[in-house]
Image 1 (cartoon, helix red, strand yellow):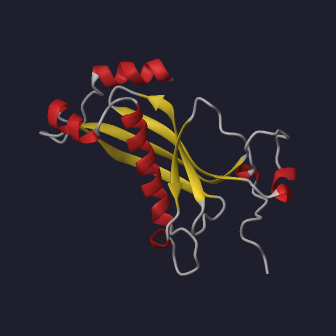
Image 2 (tube, helix red, strand yellow):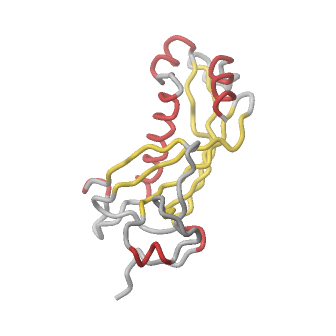
Length: 170
């Protein structure tokens, strides 16, 4: 029987998380899995959404307040996801959100779903030999969100205060 966690996919090789990368912890619950005990594919997208929401909260912004006060919401325009290794019931995952491109009306993120490598055998097969924690990439995606006016439901510039705050942290 093949262990589905032992994939030799090059993109999934364990690496440390960079300290300037925003990460959000997610525990896999039974409700997140399919009949095989593997996280159902659409839930990875939900995990990405949670991380982007928490990233914005980390910057000091709440989605409901932005909608009410600045009449702006962020809508997913494009999304792709490569599934590299399965996440399983009760895994503790870390979901990252890094900005790839910051436009006038859009933000493109690279997001990853990571799991800490705790097995010594897996640690020996990593690219980087280090005593720090190592994480294997389970999924990687690019997500483009567009700033949309909540009254006209048309694209609008990312509010200046948000744009400046983002530019200060990237």
